Image (cartoon, rainbow, N blue to C red; front, side, top):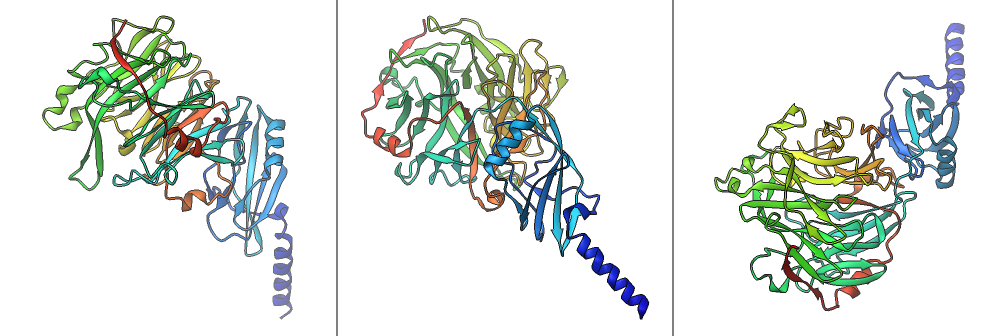
Length: 497
């Protein structure tokens, strides 16, 4: 009997001791953290990496380099905004060892430690994106949103409740400048809403004198470095359903061309090299130095046999002179879809889309898939990085996943890349950020932090086409509604100079 009482006394003492974090029981297990913020590189100005522990926990504690950062009741860890930013500022340029503890049944459990590398390189403080249901039959109930990356503040730049439930395309900056940007509101009376230093103008970027030569208004677009010129594609986009249940939807172009618009003179320049009827040209973007237009092109004859697997896009570029507005006379091929090679490696992922050049003109990131131009529906879609000095192509293994990774954008300092990834469930796209160091190496990405760490468990929206900006734009969804009442400014189609 005395022996039993002795065991009970020891058990009571053990429970009392382990009620303190410093007496936690070692589990030897990886922390059941969601989102996964283990072993990531983060900018020194990012919002708190709030997270939860999967399971029934009474409390959570976080320790960094032996310093207890916070203890919180329940299974969620939500850091104080000011305390978090003070910590990042103090530890910028360092890698800290982090340990998470969870309390169950009165016992603290210690999980395997991991690291946070706090980069001195900041990220642009604003992210814009489109919120959309991730399915083929829903194109309305859309929102275009701006998010402050240093906090959790948001602003609506487009809202289906204000914009008469219209289809809206994503917001894009000129050189990440909040004073010059554009978004599209589609449908009757719609147009491109240009933010020109806070003055919103409605543009009809389909030349009145184009007759049938321009198949649509602008679809995919990008600004020149000065903001004067816009390169854009016109596309006839067709949805098709797969017979196999493993694939749901295919979206592809039957016609597409690339043009350049002068926003000052209201002229659209037609080059036969960019609008070849035998080719499908799309996804144009200016290089940050204004010397080239990069875009993707495929042989239109690939559509004839109704086998979309033959529809593979090459990556090309054509010279451009921003001072004169002249388009070059020779197209250079950087990735040939027919070659079977990507850099020095053989691959069957040879359909290229969404070229984006880093602001320092050193690196080019693009998406690759087996075929087509709509990689959000292709689980095999990955990112690739080309060194524009050497031509070497990197697989970006650390940034990619088994699901779709695409729709990417650079930060102003060329150190951060944001992109939409479906890695969590294959259905919902979320903004992920990866650090690109000066050698072009991508580091393990992290998802956009949310104030409530269960946010992604409960949202029914995908984050589509994220873009980084250097500040908040001077308008909101109500201003866009007012701009829609304007008479659209028209353009004239002329031959390229």
